[in-house]
Each structure stands twice: as structure tokens, then as C-alpha cells.
Length: 111
Length: 113
View 1 (spheres, helix red, strand yellow):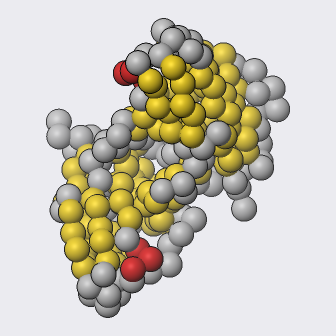
View 2: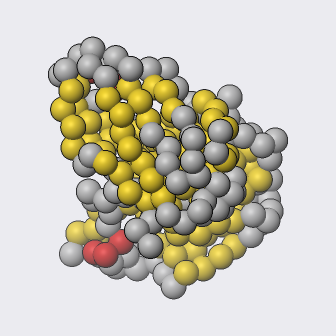
View 3: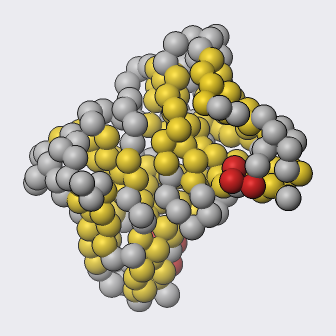
């Protein structure tokens, strides 16, 4: 069945350093979504990518969708302590089906 | 709007007991789903519904039942709780199918002893 793998599982950075998490699917995706979950909270939607090669930015966050629509990345420039949390990607196969989440990347930021 | 609400927030069950986790949304969303979150496993889809009267299985449906008699409510039933079902459970909803932004509830932390 469809699988979505996300790496790394954990990332510890110094405040001001950059951070990237990668998402890879075993099947071609119709779209990919990204969510952020603060410690003790619930996942909150960040963005959705739909087009092959799409790049979207939200302030210091840059999201990319691969040309083959099987991988995606989230890059944070100059991390801040407010970026702490777990970042999840979630993809839906282009053959229909369910939205499948990756395992998440837990980001910690040292001041 | 209250968004997506879940009750209870915490629950402790003994092995073999049954219970229902409640989920409700007031956004008139067609799509609702249940996830469980375990350390290192991410969010795994249990069951989902694309509209009232329609439900389907997700990645890990065994041991759980759902029904969708109204657009607003999507309860999750544990028929005979097992320690392996100790987890945090999240309900989510979106406008239509899963290609839309999902709104998550605050979660229910369940412990089965």
C-alpha cells in the first residue's frame, strides 16, 4: 500500500541555523500537505502543494514538491525557538485513496 | 465556531472494557477521520468518512468501529480495549475529501491497563 516516509525523525539545531525535513512517497501523489504540531498540541495545517515542481513560501518556510510528485521538502531559514514542534507531511495518492501521514520530524531549537 | 471538539480529553480503561470517543464539528464538513498517534509512528489513519452514512477503513482499523449518522458527529468505538490501543487519538475534518485542509480536534489521551 501507499507509504510516506519522512526524515530525519529528530533534528536539534542552534537558534539561527537552518532546518530541512524530507518526505518521500512510494507512489505518485495528487497533492501533499504539511502540518505543524507544537508539544502537547494538535496538528495544524501549514500548506498544500498540488503542482509538479511547485515551490511555496511562508515567511521563513519554503515548501517544495518534486517534479515526479513523489517527494517534498520543508526548509526553515534561520530557526527561532517558536519553530519548535513536530512537522508532518501528508500525501494522497493520485489514484485516489486516503491521506497518509509521514512519521514526522521533531525539531528542537536551542537558544 | 467551536471547530472540532473531542471528548473526553483523558481516559483510563481496563483491558476488555469498551468505550466511545466522541468527535463533533460545526463547520459542515463532509470529510471526517480518526487518527492515532504513537511515538515514532506519526499519525496513522484508523477510519474515515466522506459523508453521512459512508465510512471506510484506514491503515489500522482493527479493534475500532465507526458510524456517521449525521454530518456533525463521528464517534469512534473501542469494542474490547487492549493495551496496544494506548495512544493519543485525534479526530479531524475537512471541507470535502482529504485533498482539503484538515482541522484537528484537541485529542483524547487513552490509557489501557
